[in-house]
Image 1: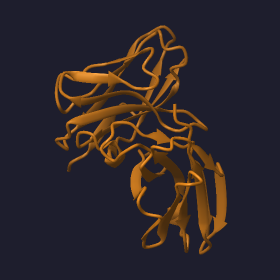
Image 2: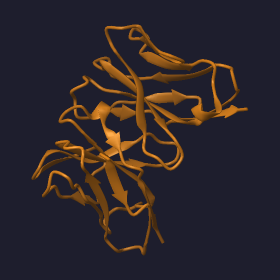
Image 3: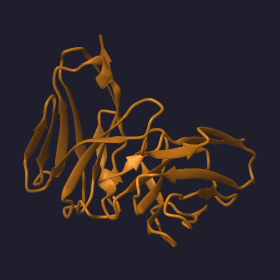
Image 4: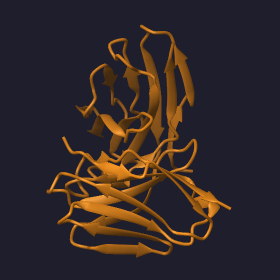
Length: 113
Length: 113
């Protein structure tokens, strides 16, 4: 099956600094790459996604980049705030309308005030 | 308010007993999913259902069973055949086929002693 590796597993940054989380995947047929944020005691929520025909996508302080040749994609959070503290998961799938996605192992982000 | 509700939040069972986790949604979604979340691992798909009275095995279906008698409900039974049932279980729902945009419940933490 698909293997999605996510790094780092834990990340601490000072408020206002940037945070970067990286994922690599093995399925060359993957076309859709969502990112989820899971706050303590809650289920994951989709925060941003990118499709394979795009190299970068930005939404306010969050951006995602994709390198299909190297099979890796990254989440970038700028000007971090304490409320960004959560566990972040990457995932990939063959198409947005597919029924199954493979999740990374998660990154616990702590933003220090 | 529309949403997806899992109950209970915490569940304790003795080894060898079957236990059923509840998942209800009022989002009018056709598709529903059950995931298992373990420390240091990504979410893994147990079962999914795209329509009432139909469901499919995910990657780790052994030791679990589901039913989908109503659109709103997708209960998961953890049977005594599941070798390591202690975990955090997440239920999700989505428009059919769009699992990446699924709404997740808050999860049930099952502890088997």
